[in-house]
Structures are given as structure tokens and as C-alpha cells.
Length: 176
Image (cartoon, rainbow, N blue to C red; front, side, top):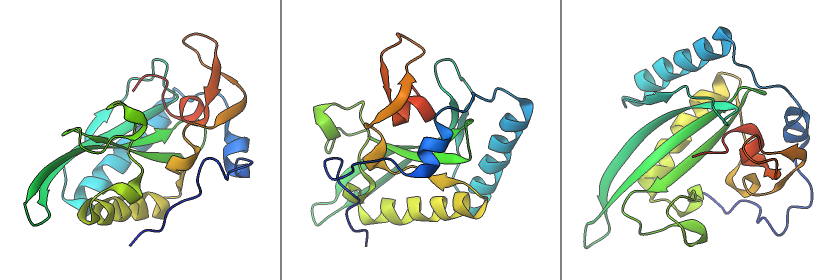
């Protein structure tokens, strides 16, 4: 079972590994793309799940690996369907887990385009994401947790419009 992560209100500063990564340039190299493709193959083999690779780095300093997870939960067997994306930053070996509720039943911030904190996901989905995260960590990647996504990224602005950027926008994606 997962305990709640630090609340955004309680976080007063960002971890050093995030602060260190923020000023790094975006890596559009073939080596970075090859590393993401390799991770895709490893994740597919270990999790027996097909992942979609999104290599579009237009306004995104990351690439992503995504899949759709479906199941039924509870006594009434309510269906659920989640789009689970693993964003892999090109600025540093950092990843973020971004989950959308395809059934629109449990969205954060009142909007279906915002991610769901992992501790709110059904247990089966949490267990699955934990396995995927273990693979990424084993390969040398560090997770940027959901609680940091919407925090201000000091000294960073968005590529799209030059506005102050969040951690998620600076390390992973401005356009989701």
C-alpha cells in the first residue's frame, strides 16, 4: 500500500536532483532516443505490456512511453481505464509517471487533462506502476514525484509562451 506523498503545500523547496537538472539543455541526440527505445523494450518484456513511444520533443524536453490499462474494480465491478505515461527527461535521467483517467471518474484539479496522483489509483494499477518504476530505477533513472509537477521551476520559462514554468513543463512536457 502506498502512503501519501508530500503535499504541495508542505513542500518548501525542490530536491537537489531536480534543481540540478532544470538548467540542463534538452538532448535531441540519437543516443537519448536509443536509450528510450531500449527502456521501451525492457519494460515491454518485464511487464508484458505493449507501450507506445512518443518521440515528439516539440515543446517537450522528454519522450514518453505510454500504455492503456483496463480492469474492473469493486463489488459493483466498476470499469476503469487509465492511460499511463512514463515521461523520460532528456535533461537528466529523470522520469515522471503521468496517469489519465480515461473514464473521467477521478481527475485532479477538476480537469481530465491533469494527472492523477498514484496513491489515488486502484491497487492493481499502483502495483503495476510500482513494477515499472522499479525497472526504471534499476536502469539508473530517478522519479520526479507527482507532488512536484505543478511547483514553480526556479529560473525557467516555457518555450511556448515564455511564462514561468513548472517542474513538469521544464523537465518533461509543456504540451500533454
